[in-house]
Amino acid sequence: MAGPVGRIRGRALGRFPVALPVGELSNLHLKEEKIKPDANGAVVKTSANAEKTDEEEKEDRAAQSLLNKLIRNNLVDNTNQVEVLQRDPNSPLYSVKSFEELRLKPQLLQGVYAMGFNRPSKIQENALPLMLAEPPQNLIAQSQSGTGKTAAFVLAMLSQVEPANRYPQCLCLSPTYELALQTGKVIEQMGKFYPELKLAYAVRGNKLERGQKINEHIVIGTPGTVLDWCSKLKFIDPKKIKVFVLDEADVMIATQGHQDQSIRIQRMLPRNCQMLLFSATFEDSVWKFAQKVVPDPNIIKLKREEETLDTIKQYYVLCNNRDEKFQALCNLYGAITIAQAMIFCHTRKTASWLAAELSKEGHQVALLSGEMMVEQRAAVIERFREGKEKVLVTTNVCARGIDVEQVSVVINFDLPVDKDGNPDNETYLHRIGRTGRFGKRGLAVNMVDSKHSMNILNRIQEHFNKKIERLDTDDLDEIEKIAN
DNA sequence: AAAAAAT
Image (cartoon, rainbow, N blue to C red; front, side, top):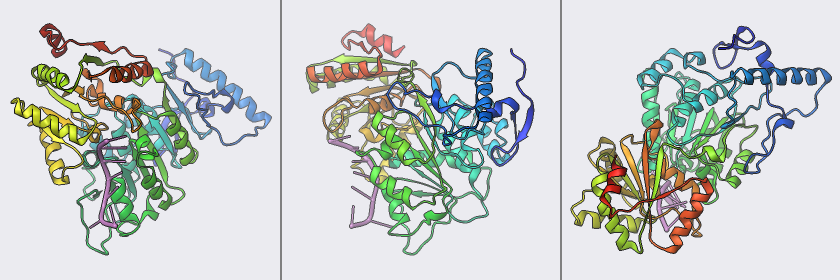
C-alpha cells in the first residue's frame, strides 16, 4: 500500500471541518482540455474560468503530474468505469471510504448505521463529498439500479435541514406515487434520530384545507401535486427551498415524461437552490438537456458498457402469440414464486387481463396499475413488500425505483417500447433493475411473441451489447436452471 | 403507452 499523500488538514468541506488529504491534492482538478467527448458524443463542461495565468498553468501541470502519480499508486479510481467531473477547481478530487469522513451530524450518522449501512457504496463515495461541499454544489449523477442513490440524496437533504425553521427546506420529486411513498420511508428512517424532523407527502389523495401551510422540513411528492401545492394552492412556499432533488431525473425532465411540471416547479425555487439529479439512465438528448437546466453541474456519468448489471441474467422465451406467452408464463410460475416476481405489461388493460387469467388458472397474483385508486395502490404495494403477494402484475408504473429485495425474477410479458413503437432501452434497464438489488443475483425473462418483438429485443441486446439467451419453457431442466 | 393531475 502506498504511503500517505500530502498532509492531513482540516478543511471546510461541508458544515464541519473534514480531514482529508489536501496539500497537493487540493490543486487537483480535471482540466477542460482534458475532457473529451464521451462515448455518447456529449461534451461535458467542468471549469468555468477560461483564462489562466502562467502561475495557474504551472499549478495545473503539477496537479496533473500528481494525479498521474496517484493513479499509478491506485489512490484514485483509474478503472474509468465512471467519470467524475468536478466543477469547482478549488475543491479536491476526493472520495470518502467511510461515513465518518463526511462529518455528518451525529444524529444523522446514527440514522445511517441504524439502516444497516456500513460503508458508502461507490456512488455514495463520489457523490456525497460533492453534495455536502460548501457552498452547495449541483450534481447530475448516474449510477446503476440498486447501488444506493436514494440514501445518497436523502443524506444530502437531511444534512441541510435546520429543524428550528418550520418551513420546507428540501423538495424531492418522484415520478410515481409508490416511489414517493418508498423514498419518504427512507427519509423517515434515516432521519429518525432527529426528533423534531417533519416530512410532508405531496401526493395524490393528500388533501389539505384551504389556506393551510406546509411547515414540514422536507417535502417528497409527485410532480402534479407538488406543482399545485406550490402555485395555485399555495400550501408550499418554494422560495425557501435549499435542496431540490429529482429522483429518476431523466424521466422527470424528458419531454415525454414530466418535463413540463418539473421545470415549472424548478423556476419557482430560489436561484441559489442546490439541484441534485439522480438516475440509472440518461438517454443522450436528456443528458444534454439536464446540463442545460442545471447551472454549473458536477457530473458523475457511467460509460455505456457499465450501465448494465452483470449480476442479472437475461433470457428470452420465443412464442408466436399472446396465448403462447401466457402458457409459457404458467410453466414458469412455480419457478418464479420461489422468491418474488414482477411481471411487466405494456398497457393497464393487458395487465388487468393477465392478472385475471393467471387467477383463473389458480395462480395467486396481485395487480398494480395507475388506473387504480391510490388507497388501493398503497395497499397492494404494501402487501407485495411484506411478501404476502409473491407475484405482481404491473405496468411501467413500477418500472423505476421500486425496491423489494426479495424480487428475484422480472418478466417482460410485453417488451418495453416507446409511443412510436421503438425499443425503450432505458425502461428495459429500469425494469430488470427491480431485481439484483445491492449486488444480489437476479433474473430477467423477456417474452417474445412475433418477428417484430424479436427485432425489438435484438435492438435492446445491441444497445447494451449484452447477450440475452434463449430459454425453453417446455424443458423442465431449463426451468430448473433458472430457479437455481 | 404510462404516468402525473384539487385541473
